[in-house]
Amino acid sequence: MYTRKYLVKRISMYALALSMAITINFVVPRLIPGNPVQTKLMQLYRQGIRLGGQEFVEKYSKLFSLDQPMHVQFINYITMLAQGNLGFSISYFPATVLNLILTRLPWTIGLLGVAVVISFVGGLLLGAFMGWTKREGKGSKLTSVVFGASLFLSQMPFYLLGMMFVFLLTYLLPLFPYGGGVDITVTPGTIDYVISILYHGMLPALSIVLVSLGAWAVEARGLMVTVLGEDYLFLAKAKGLRERYVFRQYALKNTLLPTVTDLALSLGAVTSGSIITEIVFTYPGVGSLLYNAVTTLDYPLIQGITLMLIFGVTTSALLIDLIYPFMDPRVGEK
Amino acid sequence: MTPPSQLRWARGSLTARLKGLKVVVKNRKILAGLCMILGITLVSEIGYRLLPYDPKKMGDVPLGLPPSWQHPLGTDPMGRDLLTQLLFGTTLSIRIGFMAGIVAFTIAVLVALIGGYYGGTLDSVLNVVTEVFITIPSLAILILVAALVGRVDIPMMSLILAVFGWAWPCKVMRAQILSLKERGFIRLAKLSGYHGTEIVIREIMPNMLPFLGAYFAVVVSAAMIAEAGLELIGLGPQYTITLGIMLNWAMVHAAFTRGLTNWWIPPVFVLIWIFLSLFIISMGLDEVGNPRLKVKG
Image (cartoon, rainbow over all chains, first blue to last red; front, side, top):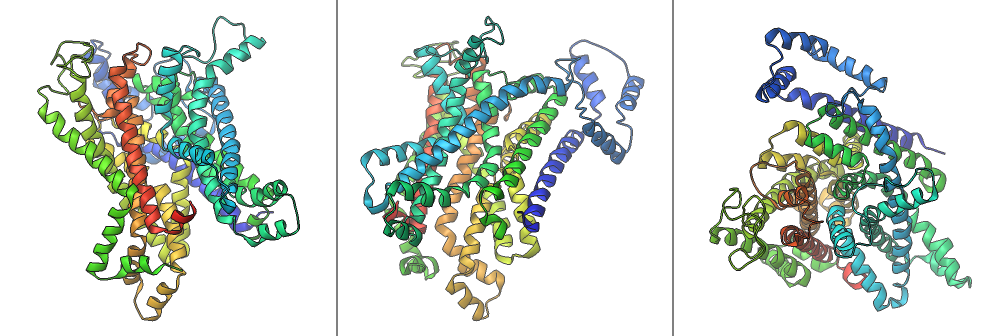
């Protein structure tokens, strides 16, 4: 199924992305001049708390093995990661970073997963259809308006659209609730609970969906337009096949399958965007947790979330890349 | 394959190049986009200097005023004139966006040219690195770096944005170089005894010029989207005002849900204006570089 080159490339990409993320996580904090224990002490001192002097710094540096040479620290760090140990959060102490992330992760995965699937499938179909109407100049006014709208939306950052929604649909015309992921007065496990979750997630999801839908529609339309003149479509038509059948079985499959690899590549950007969207809507996902971590300077938490996000996105991208050859046999032959 | 007009504009003498410039100006989209971006730059650069208020000094004016003749956009609860903030912030946002754009664009062009033209193992390695940079959620790393570095100044901010903004245009450019490489005139140049660097500079670059312009616009736009996003959550240059920082203040003070539209709508509007103008420019340049688009698209 897979050619060796394909596998080697995908897996080396995955390994590189992960090792880069781990290295950045390890190196950047250590590039900052000064001993972190001392910095923390100074911070506390400014707030009027005096814990100890030089001997305190040395003791704690030893406890955090900051006195060890870099390579030993790095090995320690990797071992910790391998055990799934991301350390303790400072602002939510004694909660561990991993636990905090795990409680928030379902929200983000739910929001992002639904939004990505809807926008990918919907956008591609919409775009392919817009492209299909281009043949023999059958395109109507409506398709060009939809195309214009898609172009405009595809250029918007999620968060700006989100802000508009917050203002228009929760303040001016309060159709939707603002903030949170679910109504806390509803008992978990009931149907009302599910409805409440959907209700709260609607606007954040919509601001992600509309933008990505626009982008996918623009791409699919472009792809469709380029194959319109192909001989195999002409042949299919000459065989007397119905137009809808030609569109579905011939045009759609050929043009849209390669976009699956683009889906893998786009995950990073969508996740980036959804972090800020969550913050704008105070949605209880990982993005909001990251915001809290940033505002309280909770470095272990920031690092843990960054690592987790990169791990999640690259792993999903790898999975998509591994499934793709089963969907499109052309990849295996290359 | 290449239309003669395009070849002339790309490879000819100075007069032919001027003709090329004419093509660019004649394209309505490019012209409109350029006017939009130059307009907003001029208005903001001149505007905040004409206004008597200080965009950064808290308590400069009465706190939390609604719009009036004296303060057309009102003032914020920290006592700063909002119009002055908007104009000053626009200039700074544009500056950061362009600085980041220039750095990211340079990296992208170099990596694409080296990889795309010379090929081989180097290209495979560069290609994998590029795709890695595309796949990872760059904002997460941006947040990490910005949070850890702490006080980011404006050049630092631009640099951070650039490091994570070069990959996507690089991938597209590389694909384009690969297809250019197979064209007849490049082979001719090779047969005529030009060596690699010469071909890249004299043949490939001029043919990519309109596309390069388009990618530059896209890169700047992407850098500004990331910039405003980072600043929105409070991770930007400190003790100054940009559009994103204005939005951050507005968000922290719950301006969206308190109906303080005079505070957050103007920066959103300016941001959309900038994104749109850059997008229109890139679309226009795409048309110039790829004339078939105009007929078909």
